[in-house]
Image (cartoon, rainbow, N blue to C red):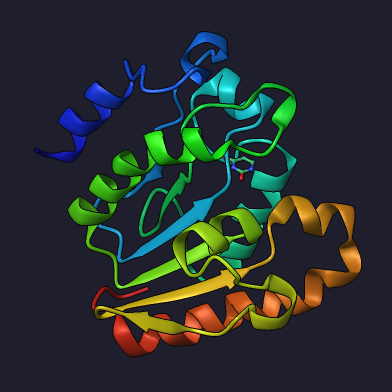
Length: 188
Ligand code: URA
C-alpha cells in the first residue's frame, strides 16, 4: 500500500454516517516524505468544501506559525485530522466516528513514519497522546512513544478565539523547531 493508493481508497470511505453529509473527504495535505506530522481535530466547512485540511482562518494562522519555523506543506510537513469528514455543525466527533476513522490515520502514520507528531488541540491530543491530556498544562512537552516524539499544543481556532494565548502557543512552535534540529535528518 502506498500513499496514493491509500488516499484513493479513503476518498470513497463509507465507514461512518459522516459520508452522507460530507462534500469531500479531507484525507490530508503535505509532503509525503515529511518527518513532522500535524494532527488536527476534524474538517470544518472550508475544509469540507475544498477537500484540504486547515484552509480557513485557523489554517492561515497555522501556516503562518509553520512558515516562521521553516515548515511548509509543500516541503516538509504533513497535516491530517483525527477524522476525515466534517461533523455536521462542527460538533465534536462521536466516539464511533473516531473509531471508524482511526485506521486511516494509522495507515498514514505508518507510511509517513514521522519522527515528530504535533497534536493540535484537546481532541487530537487526547486521542493520540493520552485520554486525560490537558493542553493548558502539558502543551509544548515532548513525550516519546516507540521512538516517536509527540507534543500537544493549542488548536489554532482556540487561538483565534483567545488571542492572549498566541505567544504561549508560539513558544511551542519554537520548541518544535529546536526539536526538529535535534532529531530530524532533512535540512530545514
Ligand atoms: N480544524 C481542524 O481541526 N482541522 C481542520 O482541518 C480545520 C479546522
